[in-house]
Amino acid sequence: MGIEIERPFPKPETRRPAPMPLPRPQRVLWITTDHMRFDCIRAHGNPRIHTPNLDALVAGGVDVTRCFVQNPVCMPSRASFMTGLYPQQTGVPDNGYCLRPDFEPLASTSFKAAGFQAGQFGKLHLQPHQDRDLDAHPTHTYGFDFFQLSEERGAYPDAWQTFLRERYPEHVEAFRTRRTTDPRRQEKDGTVLDVPWQASHCAWVAQAACTHLKSPYVNRLGSRQFLHLGFHHPHPPLNPTAEAFAPYDGAEIPAPRTGREEWADKPEPLVGMLRSRRNWTDQDFLEYRRHFYAMVTELDLAVGLVLDFLRAEQALDDTLLVFTSDHGDMCGDHSLTHKGPHFYDEVMHVPLILHWPAGLRARAVEGMVELVDLLPTMLELAGGTPPENMAGRSFARPLLDGGEPEGRSDVYAYSGQAFGMVRTAAAKYIRFAPTGGEVLYDLAQDPGEQVNRADDPAAAALLGEMRGRLIDRTLEACRSPQIRFHPF
Image 1 (cartoon, one colour):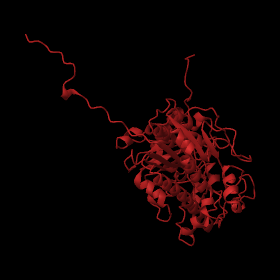
Image 2 (image 1 turned 90 degrees about the horizontal axis):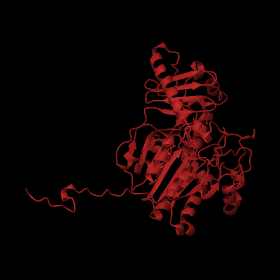
Image 3 (image 1 turned 135 degrees about the horizontal axis):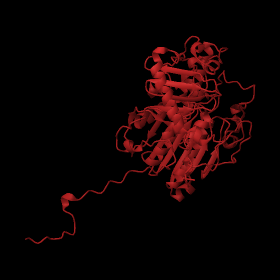
Image 4 (image 1 turned 120 degrees about the vertical axis):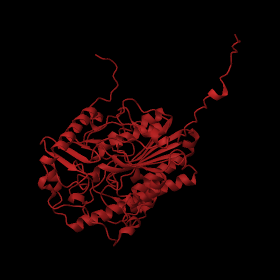
């Protein structure tokens, strides 16, 4: 019988190599816009729009091509993506509701828990601002360490107006706009401002964030930075500067996609929405779109300012830069403008780009995601842990591994004005309350969402399937986000 020799170490061939440390971004810049639809980026197939800086983000980042919002208007959509929860869970089902200032989870506090300092610049819109004189020191700062707020361009004394009075006092009145409740406010006719674009609201947001990152105080702290850059562009009023309007002055603009009397097979309240612009001419819609495109280009200039700053500071590679929007704008499609609870893809489908050269391989991601999935994904990419009570699903791991996120089988939205929508790759179903009206689009045959098949016997099976999906998703989205302490 041989003597067994105890080996103090495992055999070399059985040793497992130590896992390689995952890269972590030094800073996270979350750029959000207002009314920015998916196809308002040239790289997304729109040759008539001028967006060279956004095109560069698409080419060098992860371009999520099928991202959908959870509510078709501003405040509930923002409360949703800022918490990783559905509108029913945040208590913000529509505009005019205030997200509780101590609400958890929040983007700011979640990133702070991951070792970041949190800064807010520009539009946040988690509290109502209509007919209120918001200033640079609002009631609620929602957990941000640095806070410069400007919710709407030119209607209130705020951080941007302070900047204008100090740097461009001769242009303060040029940017003045009427409040949304003022009946004299016009949003049909665009206005081109003969002022430098560097004085615009979006330029100020970009400059404020860059100034913050360059600050000796911030650099002395040595901590990682999470900044939210809230752009109001391209939200109306449509008053681009001359530099941003130049590519569209006299240019041919594609006509909106409309059908004759689309309301004929639709239930209320969709009928009322579709008939709301009957006093608009084809030329009115074209000019709205022309000036809207110019607002997008002005936004693109601001994105370029941020990119130029990061390159100059040799900070682009280790910055996770995320670009998205709270919802889109109809821009004349279906004879509509702005947004609303009609749930058309023009409003629900938004751009989502994640650009991080040191950590993510550039590519297009085609799986369907909800915007509620973004916050947990960003947290995980940044080395944090998404709170367990977030409803969104992180798709960070396949991105880090170079793979393809699986994507959702359907996406869901809820509106306090209407009710709900569920969408698959092949169909969309909308239920309106309290009328009980239904809309069913067969997207495989009708990608333009014009024909309602809810009353078509040939679509009965599809209707039943989509009804069931909406019920299931609504029940799921109504689960409380609060942590359970006791079973009784």
